[in-house]
Structures are given as structure tokens and as C-alpha cells.
Image 1 (cartoon, rainbow, N blue to C red):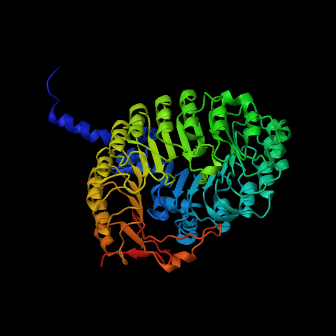
Image 2 (cartoon, rainbow, N blue to C red):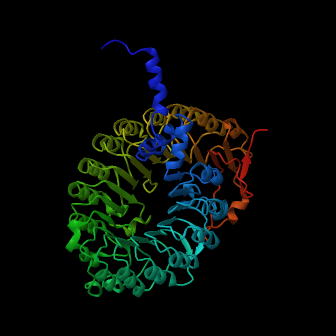
Length: 595
């Protein structure tokens, strides 16, 4: 009965692990594997598992549009239902990448729209999308499309939106936040209200699109499942009928208080009883009472685009004990963050954006410092995400975050240059304590001032960031040696962005070679040569290197708003790609290849 299993039987079991599992069972098992890295590992077991993965993969995220070839993606995953595609580097959001840099939707739509017969959800981010591109998509997939997200995209007009509204009658989500859209009339919203009765979420927040309140009322009447509306500016008093009709609405952002100080005009605005996620535009002190009746039900509150003082923030937040998400500007001050720490014990996400740089317009000139962050860390121990612009910071505050916020998976800190002196630099020990204790961190950003982090601190980041996959660092380190020590520890880092650092091209190249998982690096502001010659040291198979030298031509580049896009520093973009060299490099970008 007992004893060792005969060698032949062990071998048969090993062979049977693959061959003995019926295809139906293997398909079912693969259906429960969602993590793309787990999927990748499973697909490497054998050819059969590779084939089953290809046939059962429902969603793919392409983290950089030039890293993959659309035709190969189509052939590998013929039954895709959902695709997310990211374009320009994140620096495009800060005016550091011109609009005509690249990242076009056309080749992707041409290859994928018709052949992917199961495709019903598409998410594009920082991509140039034209009306013609959207026409191709709608003609091929309009009858099936349920979700279209265009996030910070440019190049299209409301004509394309009208076509989507007329043709995509199964559409449940339309997302256009921060897109630059040419407004040729508001008919698109009327068409959407008439044709898309199953719409659940509509977002055209932070756009210049003008809409008629009557069309929003029609949307509420016809789309009984509408739970989220984030919109451009429209006087809140014109939305009274919409709010009365939208009985299922849970999430609202946008609108506007055009007549600040005239509470009587807005007294009749009554939000739906289901509303729990809220962001209001241009709200002032006198308008705050509009949210008091349901403040205890709020789970998300966005106050970034209001005229509230520090005291106003304190008063509102003290009435919102159930917040999970809070987004504010740094006018909230340390006093406001102390109220957050005392009141919002369930808080999961905290975002503190940069406010007006003129301290005379703020009640508290100091903005946010180590005092406020420490109060939040001690009081809000369920935090998973912190992004903050601060005027001062200490090692002790970072240690407090590491001690109390064990669930953090995303931490981002920017140290402003508003104050002449910072209390406690360098931040080496605080960064070490935070990274050592927050073991769930996957995303980490630290943008400091010169002297903010020494070579020792940079090496600590490498030593204690084994699980981090994305990192942004600015004004860190003192020498090339610090960068190399950092790189040796970053075994799982996949995406790295560096700004305003002292490193040489040679050190950057050697650092890249030390990071085995790295798939993408973008650098701006380093000790660059005129030709980028030392960047070739990082050359390897399937690795594209693009060098943008500073030149007088950069002064002629403009953003979509007509603002100058000026960068006096060289840039480097290097990335792993299965698509080979890209063919649409603008003339000021120099592809580098070994001789």
C-alpha cells in the first residue's frame, strides 16, 4: 500500500498534467486567471497552454502603443473583448511633449476594428484620434460597442461623437475626460439621449463642450440606468430638472456656480437621494450648505476646482465621516488635513493637487507640510493611495506614513519650491522607512528639490522597492554612482521616468542594463551630449532608443491650446518593442541604432 511511487507512474503523471486535462476544463480554468503576468507565465508552459491563453484572453492593456504591433496582437488574441491602449509619455500632460509627437490611433483601428469580432470595449489614453478613425471603428464595431473611453485624447470633433451616438445603441459608457474636442454643436448629446437608452456612465468633464440642459433632462428620462455623469461647465441652477429625473444617479461632477455668493439662486437644487460621489465646480463659501443635507452619505468628494478657503475645507470635511476618496488643492492646509485625520477614518485615496502659487490668495501661506501628512497618516490608516504637493516635508513624516499606512500601493510626493528652506533634507531615512514598511507599494513617485535625496537615499529606493513596477523620480541623487546603486535593486521595475537629474548618458545606459524587468524609460533633464552617443550602450535586441536634443525648433512647438511647448532639456525615450522601429518619428526625434 505504502512506499515510493514507481518512476514510470511519476513520469506518466507529469505527462498527463498537460495531455490529461480536457480543453473544456483548461478553458474554464484560464477564465479565472485575470492578472496579465499570471497569464504570461501560464502561456509559457507549453504550446497548448499558449493556444488556450490566446483563445480565452478577454482583455489586453498595451502600456505603450509603439511597444506592440497591432497585426500581431490581432493574430495572437482573436477573441479579445476589451483593449486598452496608451500613447504619449505622461510628460505630455505637462506640456513637455508636442501634440504632433506621434501616438496615432489610425494603424490600430485599421488592423483591429473589423477582425476582432468580439471587441466591445476600447480605452485610449493620450492618443491622437481623428473623426475618420472613429468612423472606421463605428462602421466595424458600432453594433457591439459597449464602452468607449477616450482619455486625454486629441484630434476629433463632435461630428464623430454624433456618429457614435447614432450607431452604438448598446453603448453603456462614453468617457471623454480632458479630451480636446472640436465643438461643432451639441447635437451629439441629443442623439445620445435618444438612441442609447442603456447608457450607464457619461463623462465629458474638463472639456470645452457646450450642452443644452434640455438634452440632459432627456438623457435622464430615457437612460434609467444612468448612475454617473461628469460634465463640462453648466450653471447648476439649469440642472434642477435633470437631478429630479435622474433617480439612479450616484456620481456627479462638473456643473458650475456661475453666480458665486447667490445661494438663493441654487436653493432649489436637490441632488438625487442615491448620490454619494460628488465634485462641484466654482463652489464658494456661500454655496457650501447645498451639500450639507447629504454629506454623511458621501463616499467621494472632489474640491479641486472650488473657491473654498482652509476654514471652508475644515467645515465641509468635518461633516463627511464616510469618505473613501478625497481630492483637494493644497489650500486645504495642515489644519484641513488634521480634520481629515480626525474625521475620515475610512479614507482610501487622498489627492492634494497644487493650488495657486500666489500665497496671498490662500488663507494659509504654508500650504501642506509634514504636519498635515503626519495627521493624515496617524488618523487614516486604511489609505491605499496618497498623491500630494507639499511645501515642506521631513523624514519623520515619511516614517509616520510607513508606520501607519501599511495598505499603500501608490505613493506620490512633489516638494514645491515655494519656501526658501525645507526643514529636513536630505530625506534618505524617511524614504527608507516608508519603502521598508509599505510592502504593498507598486507605484512610487518622488519629485524633490536639489539636495532632497543623496546617493545613499537613492540606493535605499533600489534596495527596498523590489515590488514596485512604476517609478517617477525628480531631483534625486548626487552622482552616477548613486544611480547605479539604485538600479541594481530594481529587479521588478517595468517603467521608470526621471526628471531634472545630474546623471550622465553613460550612467543612464548602464543603469538600464541592470534592471532586468524594465520595459520603458523616459528621461528629461540630464547631462546630455549633442548626439546621444553614449545612449547606445543600452542597446539590445528589441530595444528602441529615441533621443530628442534641445534645439531652437522646440520653441516653435505648441500644444493644442496654442500654448508654447518649450523644453530646453534633452529627452530620452527607450522601450522594449515587438513592432520594430516606429515609422512616424517627427523630425526633431532621433532614433538611435547600433552601427
